[in-house]
Image (tube, rainbow, N blue to C red; front, side, top):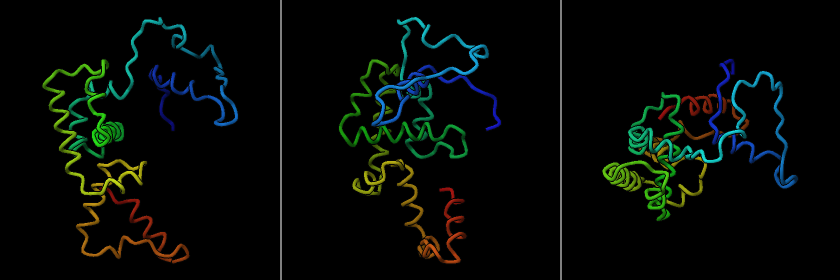
Amino acid sequence: MHQPSERLEDVKINNITGRAGRMLEHFSGNIYLIEPENWTYKDYFDEPADEVKIPTYFKLLNEDFDKIINALSGTYSHEEKDQYRYYAVANKLINEYSNDVLNNTLTAPEIQLNKTELEYLNKAVITAFQNLKISSFTLEANPTVGYIQQNRLFAFLSAQATLDTWLLPHPKSDELFQRLLQASEKTI
């Protein structure tokens, strides 16, 4: 909000246009361009068909390799604006390893990493997986929270002398707001 408009990546535009409509009600949707005279970019659909589009997942692996490695080790700064992108990729890699499909990503034609980088990435994913202290059942039961984040939360809670200050009281308790505020302000 209150930021200048930014051009969306073509892959994201394609993704959004493919999701127009109402789920289970309409099988297609309509996209309307409001104020076309203010549209300062070449129309997305006028692009040459032979343009190679690389999904963001592979693009980040190719272009931000070091940041992905840092996220796998849990050391990428949580203060950075794009931290969620890199942790999402790291968590996806760990998930692929746990499901024995990581090799599909590492051998995908979209990957532009050299052999040394691929070996390093593979080792980093395996190490990140082995460092998880939470059971796979718990990790899978919370699919909207990344493996690395759940592991950090588990380590934080395990280090507490008592969990009393982190337990949420009854919803009608006078302490509820303060406890929720404490939990929401905590960075791990």
